[in-house]
Amino acid sequence: MNKLVLLCFLSLFVRANEITFDSIEQTGKKEITISFKLEKVSLIRSYSLENPSRIVVEVNQSELKNNIDVPYNYPIKKVRASQDGGLTRIVVDLYESVYWQNPSQVIDEENIYLKLPIKKNKNLNKNIRDIVVAIDAGHGGKYPGAVGPNNILEKDITLLIAKELQRTLDNTTGYRSVMIRAGDETIGLNDRYQNARKFGADIFISIHADGFRLSSVKGASVFIWSDEASSTVARNLSDKQRKRIQADIKNLKPMDFNEDVARALYPEMYKNKISESKALGSKILDQLKRDPFTKIHKKNVEYADFRVLKSIDIPSVLVESGFITNPEDAQRLKGKPGRRMIARSIFLGIHNYFKEKPKANTFMHTDPGHVIYEIQKGDVLSEIAIRFGVTVDELNETNSLGNKSIYPGQLIKINI
Image (tube, rainbow, N blue to C red; front, side, top):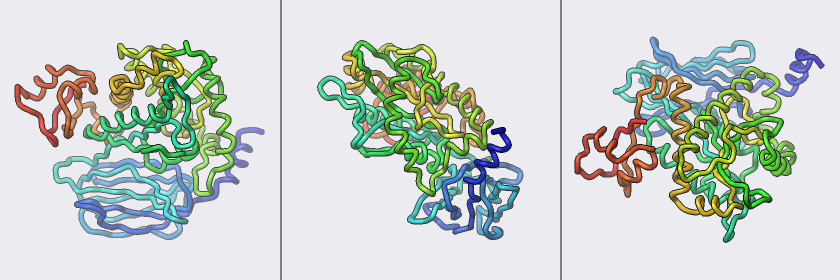
């Protein structure tokens, strides 16, 4: 079957997704949310433009049910939309620059709502949004994952690392995390990557602490997706996940986005995503190598058939923080210092990735050379320094702290 025939065949499975305007409403202090109704979760691209100020949302494989041309009040001039083949382009014309969020897709009973929140901010000279990081704590609920000495469960370790990473991201200006699971929940493989799309994630990080039949196998690894496994351990981990994959594929819901069909329809997009995933994985692995407490299982990014990584357009990596069937790894991951170092490596890897691959319309579009961190209750400088890979002296000098105490809500600059 040649490529043209294959694409025509696949297009039969992709029914045009009707879009209708829903509402513009005040959803918070200075925040307005623009909503549209969709028939199913969609492949979306969003960006902002200046002179004149506007936000654009492009929805693939879609069509306008009715003309959209809605005037509104400050800071929105008008919401409009146009059709270009199978692409719907929604444009929000603005009076001035705003803080905005990557659109989310929210399922409510029988509808999908595409929601675009914007917030007034007089201090902005251009439209800006946060970088959204989806954090997937592996396993959970009825899937405990690997079991280590003294009944250490993989699902508990991964959630603790995920929450440590979440804390750093959410308290650092310009980043925002979305948790695929926030507690001991059972979440299917489909739902993990589907939720990353619904949340409007820019990247997807899956955290694991797996096991192996030989207790001598140890160390951290970083994986991206491939049909072919890059090592015996990678093949073993792939095979374990495949036992759940077939059932999950069959359980795709009518409203879900079909990543498998989309990969054939948009091969260049997927090829770019794999390249970006490797770049992201390499940056995280570089940081893991710098951690004196973490041994490295493989010195290069590995490849495995992990379905959670198969999003067509979201750079996705899986971090094996260690093997809890190994006594040394289990001991390291059982304690907060060991888990914090894994979270630090992931965060710094993410940050270094965006330094090299700046995300348009975010604070990393032009690398500022630092991040702004908001002090939280219970924070001390020594722990902040560890979490960001700097020294207390550097924090004191950069922020002219002297002997002054820090306090919740205080903003400090961290040069990383």
